[in-house]
Figure 1 (spheres, rainbow, N blue to C red):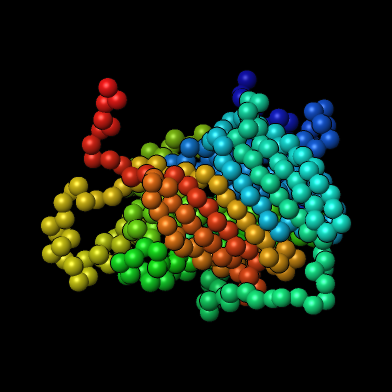
Figure 2 (cartoon, rainbow, N blue to C red):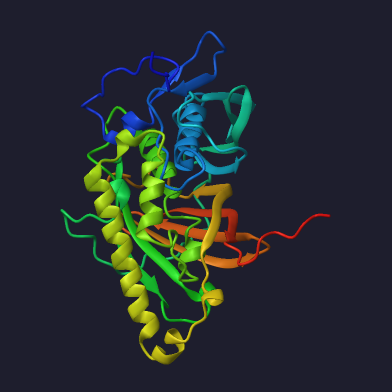
Length: 362
């Protein structure tokens, strides 16, 4: 008998909903408790990752918490910790705790568990709509002037069959010698059209899911370090997926082609003006990522009712600091009409492959 990766048999896909709504669908587990939910469908295990895509735990925890909050409240902040790598072959149980219900603010905590152990935990705060009064302080960072991507373009591994698509939008200060000066930009949106029945909650969950894409990788990108050192390494990672149904030969070929193109472009940039230095570069000077995994993730939702996650959103990411085997990334997200809808932070383990084996502890 095949191993069940969900607690209940997944129902047929709802064609009236966007793919990301089906991916993030939750099922109540009333036999355990009134505020306990589980993933309805299998979760994605990204290539090279230690566990499930972190965005799934973030988004489903948010979705579970929103089910316990009145509809005139919307999330304004979410602080998450990744405790253990999630296993895509085991169902997740989301336990919601109703910490406080106030007139203007509501607090919830959600703990995601597998095998009875917490793998992810988050605290969320919700605020009532229009509770700030008539007189308000308002300001926001303006959206960079960039045109939306042309329709029909592809950009990443997720684009093939995944619930959202992305498009590169360049890097600001790409040639700066200071990694902290660079800002990586991408467009992203959920595939299809999110249903009216899903409401703003579905758009918020979709946004939360997308925020984890390419995020901690910003630390390596501003250092000009590829996530995979070779196409062969990427292929090994893809073939090691626990749920390989997400990918096919076309996906693998596309991912490898993109990796080759990125590395070729990066090599050309390095050669410009520094050919002799690049030619004589010693092997020990090369930097390769040995481990990259998220530790925590925070989202500040600024305008929860003022965007659609199925329209192009612009993401701008930077890394103000890296050290001690960790790195920090900051992300701003604007809606299609230029509204700043979210600011995110993420810290993760970012360790390089070492030239020498670890020293003996003796």
